[in-house]
Image 1: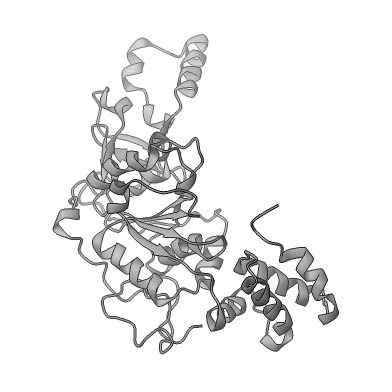
Image 2 (image 1 turned 90 degrees about the vertical axis):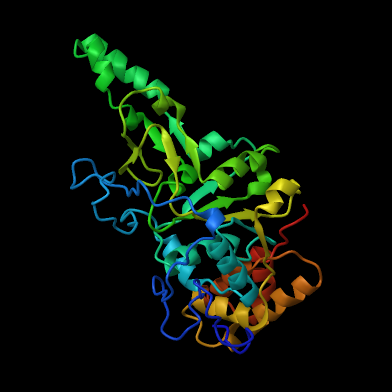
Length: 366
């Protein structure tokens, strides 16, 4: 692991996220209190909610109800645990992450493929014990509505038709219908629920979005909330809707959602487009560089625990670094695959060309 001396001295006291650099640190071991937001980024602690199973204990809309920490889904894949523990950042990355936490501003992370843009979000969530990362993968068809919530109107109509045909549906029952079971919050919508501790939201590859999406996000980022018009039209409140990452139900009061703590928002970009000035003004910027030297070696040790001596694979490391210096676009995970192939397949130095052809291919060009 990178030493503190190489990072420029001891860990700054203002850091909340410390990157597990202190001896004995590990996921969920943060010793710092989550800082208070600036006055202009406070959204209030009224109406704190947490997901729950309907019928289990006091409702989350009860102000006297205890508020548990976010729980990981036991059936969720464990890739977050693995990549969070193996993440190796530098001092600049940790400075920017902590600045984003203190200022409650989104962090736009750029850099070549494979440098740790996605794993940074997992590392922050695990160390600060903020629950699983809420991930929103962006495509050219992504819209703000997709990130906030989905209303399954066809499923609702289908269920109503079935009840009508079976004779179990009455007109007055539509007033008491559980519309919340047809509404599921998206990753962004879930991240903006009023919680005592924020969630980590990863908006992945924002540069692939439609040209309007970054501007559409500005109002949500500034106000810390949004409306669900389908719930504004009904008289009952609250309505319990489905959360983004499970089947827990959360209350929405009068069709409005507004965060208590602005989420830790990490947006990633491969640098394929420019963003409008209004969007850039509201973000902090972090450019990750391809790791080298001791940081690259530390990443190898974390991802390949069976590697006991770097001398075993020094020729592979040297070849990776040589190709990079010659202008070939490579990523650290390709080196990890090359080292695993060398060790697991018991290949020797004479097989270096085979390893290069298999996994050290350029990431750009034909």
